[in-house]
Image 1: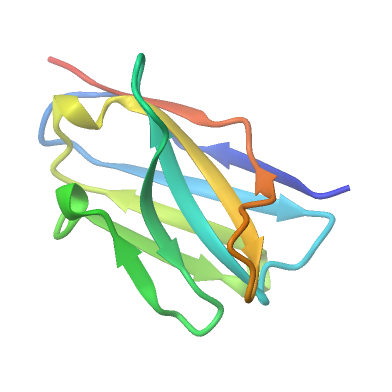
Image 2: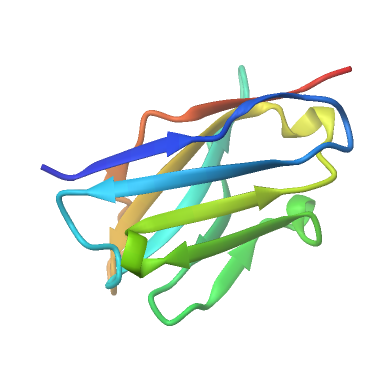
Amino acid sequence: QVQLVESGGGLVQPGGSLRLSCSASGTTISSMTMAWFRQALGKQRELVASITPSGSIYYVESVKGRFTIARDNAKNTVYLQTNNLKPEDTAVYLCSARRWGSSTWIYWGQGTQVTVSS
């Protein structure tokens, strides 16, 4: 059974930073595209960042220059470093995975809450 478990969320002031982690079990992530999504209250789920097995990276425009996605295949873990956080970054952040060549995100974590507020 594949499980993705996120951690690292919390309450932070504007301008602060958090490092989110997504630990996988039941499969190896080395051949998967990994991603972070977020869902704010009352809004649609949004793809924030993704990283392919070869290391190609995508960021949504609103986080470019502030967020960094990285993967450690040896630890079966994906990270999202979030810097210069803004109140509009407040959301539940979810980790997801899809198999190489597939367009379907098939594995999802439960999410970790990020709240940016003074």
